Image 1 (cartoon, rainbow, N blue to C red):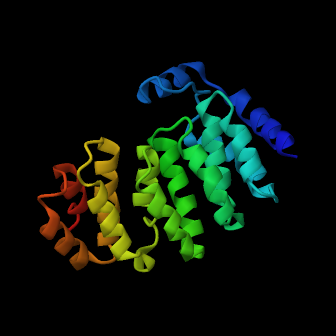
Image 2: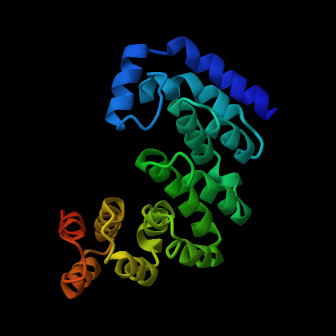
Length: 218
């Protein structure tokens, strides 16, 4: 069934391949990945029906798509997981961690972060797993831990968010510094005074990038 799904996706995407656009897309991503050359609207329109029709655990086809060479297949895997994330429970976090750390770059990592966040929001005891991710050697897992509450709004666990930001504040990695600022900026839409106080108190610990991002709309 999973193999059939992947074949359906291949049949939907391959006729739309654009070699010239593929080269431009690869260059934009610093040559890290090979592309078919589909735009996001093209890809989503071509795969929407198959993704919606899938009625089983989405992890197996997602893993199969992740093994495909062209980057669009990983994007379809992310679309599939996001559409069916209500089917996923805590047991899915191990597989999601593997995907985060495989063929890693901001595009797929940031697409998987809300999937992780949705699982943890529904099973709040799983926040303890995020406490493990935030100290992992792989910085992409740390980025997801920082960002997993991004869509939580009033449900955000403020103490944990601020703790993660402080834990990672000394890091030089751009994607961590950016994540700190992004997470704080998003939470500032819900609790601007709390974010303002946090930034003011810890300005000397946070990078300039994190501060600029966090206070962009304050």
